[in-house]
Amino acid sequence: MRKFLKTIFLIDLIQGLWVTFRNQNPKYIYTEQYPADRPKVAERYRGAPRLNINPDNGETLCIACNLCALACPENLIVVGSERNEQTRRKELTYFTYDLSRCMFCGLCEDACPVDALELTQDFELATYTRDGLIWDRQMLEEGPQPTQYKC
Amino acid sequence: MPETTFLDSTELVLNMGPQHPSTHGVLRVILKLDGEKVNGTECVIGYLHRGVEKIGENRTYQQFAPYVDRMDYVAAVSNGLGYCLAVEKLLNIEAPPRAQATRVILTELNRIASHLLWLGTHALDIGAITPVFYCFREREEVLKIFENYCGARLTTHAFRIGGLQYELYDGFEKQVNDFCDMFLPKVEEYEELLTNNRIWVNRLKGVGILNGDECKEYGVTGPVLRAAGVKWDLRKAQPYSGYEQYDFEIPTGENGDTYDRYLVRMEEMRQSVRIIRQATAKIPAGPIGKTPKVIKPPTGEAYVSIEAPKGELGYFIVSDNSTQPYRVRVRPPSFVNLQALDRMVRGGLIADVVAIIGTLDIVLGEVDR
Image (cartoon, rainbow over all chains, first blue to last red; front, top):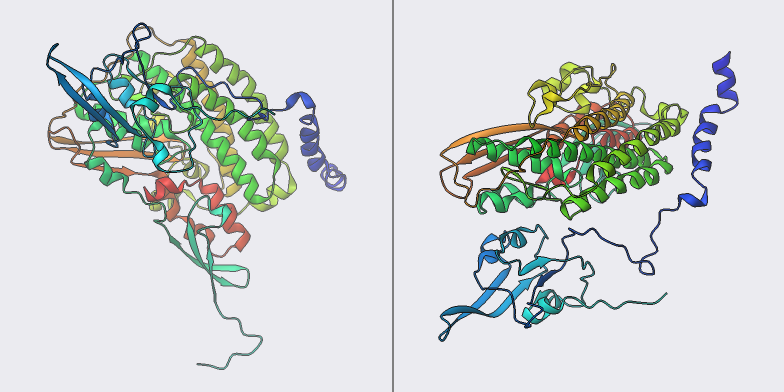
């Protein structure tokens, strides 16, 4: 009898609908209004790579040891170096990072002995061309400059 | 060719997928139909084949770790754990206790995330639109914990061979405990929405029955096996990563139908919360383990299987004493579970096919590899 009444009065459906109505309170809004509100990603976020420069003298921290290129599973880093005849040290000439194949695993960052290569919190990496994803040394040092729209 | 009359019925062959949204990716199912009744199915897989096992042969042990995350991409942490345990077995090392506790917490969080995604999409397939939004809302909190811990949300690459790469961040325990406190009432909420809902019950009860013996014959594992009443969980049967320290139940069903599988997974989420609470209460201090710079395991082979959210996930690695594996073979739970689809669907209706694919909880990235 009770079951019959429950069926007649659609108790099970009303129970479910009550959950839905409870959640309609405007204080339960979770949608992020991107790009007006930009998300704050975690400190350890693995986003766009950056080649750090020494803030004191503006020189690159990279010692051209090639360890990141060896650690990379996709072989997408190319490090060019040249022996400086005066100081007898290797110096970085070019650094290419192919972001189109990067899977942001962070192995290059782990391999770097001097914390020169780093995956940063920049996450807006879209470009109009494929070539735009192959970053050279200058791009890696400056970082991406995504257009920021005002809403 | 015999004369057919208007009243005769002939078999209709219908392609479902690979673009059909309820096949959860790119599964193509060829259905042999008699009206609405399904007389047989054939699965066509391979649309997402990337040759992950072959890639493994051309990468060093450390380099292959990010690729395993991309097989079952909704439970990447579990995949990473299985791979790391397999290589650790080859090397005959063990992660330190602190790393093991962290691994347990993250894999159980990942189990919750995976089951939430399953619940949302399964309900969506059946026609209940609401749960998917609530499930993704809670899943987001899990993904935020992953992002804070290792810097990625989905393909996490959280563990390294021999331990962890990242130390726990400040406030990790608090964030995880807050999530647990927040999450349990939400599970009640999902149950309120679905468990007694008459449409849900009618669509699921008695659909896709697979009893315990059939499960064993097909090699089906995970919640599908447990819903058939077989109390089998690798976390209890052959504990790894310190699971023997934690107190939890193995939920089982009775009938082995789709409804029981739903109840088993709901209960599993609660049990995961229990494990997480126990693990966060006593994360041991100490080192988190260091990845060896060069990994060169001695010649030999190792098979390690773990209880992934979808079933038994096994890694079989053969080493030839070089820095690269000689062979990596993955035993993906989804692939094996998918075999049972034909048995479960036969005799049912087309609408049940959708429900059954949903309840098997397959991820095509893992089926095709």
